[in-house]
Length: 429
Image 1 (cartoon, rainbow, N blue to C red):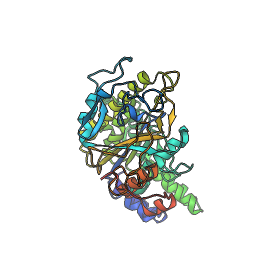
Image 2: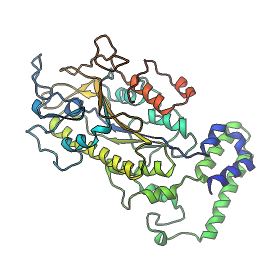
Image 3: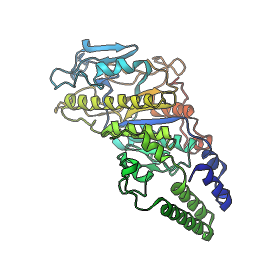
Image 4: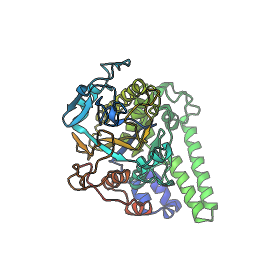
C-alpha cells in the first residue's frame, strides 16, 4: 500500500480524525535532515587523541598524562592529535583509516572538537544520560529521540538504536534493528528467503493470494477500530495500522544496503545511512563499548580508538555515497573522560572532564572550542567569542544540547516539556 492510498484509507475510515494534523502532515513530506549519535561506551580518554597532552611531567609528581611523546603531537589544520602511539604497545595498522595520522588529516576540515566539558560525574549511567540528553537526572529523552519526535513522530522506524543511551520518554519508539538482514525480513514478509535476489526468495503464497491476505489483515484492523470505544484505544489502533500497512520504503532501503552488511560500527553505519536515504528514519544511535580501560590503558584504548575512527570514517563514506553530506550531522561522545594519570595497573580510571566531536551538516569544521589545563581540568570560555576566558563559563553537556536543539529545530513544546537550563551558545556554526 502506497502512502497516498494509505492516507485515503485513513480519511475514509475515519481514522484520520483521530490523528493530530502534525501526524498526517509528517506523512506528506520526506525527512531531509538526519542525526547520528556515536557512543564510545565506557568513558574515552580525550587526552589520547583530540585533547593531546603527551608525556610532560605533572606538577604534582603523579607521572605524565600520557605515555606518548609531546613531540608526537601534530596538527591537521587547527585540530591537534598525536601522530604516533606509545612505544610499549603493539601499534595500530599504519594503513588503517582509524590511525590518527590518517583519520585527522582526512577529516579535520569538517571536524569540530569541543574540549573541557564537565560532566560533573564519574558514574557510567549518570554520565551517559548527561552527555546524550543534556540532563543528569533520569527520565529525559536522548537528543536523537527528540530530533526524531520533532521531525518524524509517526514514522515507525524514525529512531534506530544500536545501544547507548536511547531513552525516548515515550515520544517515539527506538527501533533496535541489529543486523541489516532484519530489513529484508520486514520488506518481504511473503518470502522464505528474504535476503536472496528477487527470483530466489521462494514466496510462500502466489502474489494474488498474498494480496488477499493483506486485505484481510486491513479489514481485521478496521473491525478492531470500529469496535473500540475509548479515544486512547482508537489512537493506539491507528498507530498499529500505520506501523503495519504504512509505506515505509523498506524495499528501497534494502536496495541501498550493501550485498553483505558489515559487522560492528561499519554495519551500523550502513543500515543507518540506508534508512535515511530511503526516508524511513531521521536519527540513529551507533554504539561500541570497550573504553573503560582500568588496566593496560595504552594498548586497549589505542585499539578501541582505531576501531571507533575506522567506523566513523566508514560512516562518512556511506554518507557521501548517498549524497547526504549536507543533510546528516554526526555527534561523537562518551560517558566522561579518564584520569590524567595512570593507576597501578597501567590503566586509567574515571574522570569528569570529557570532549565531543561533531561533523557534517551545519557544523563548521577545522575548529576546537574549549580547553583543559595540563591536569585536564576544564578551563572557562567566553560565551560570545568561545575563547578561553578566566571570567567566562565552564562548558557542560546542557550547553551542547541547547545548541543541538536549536540546530535541529526541536519543537518548542518538546523543549518546554523537557527543559534544559543554561546559556545558549553558538557552538556548531
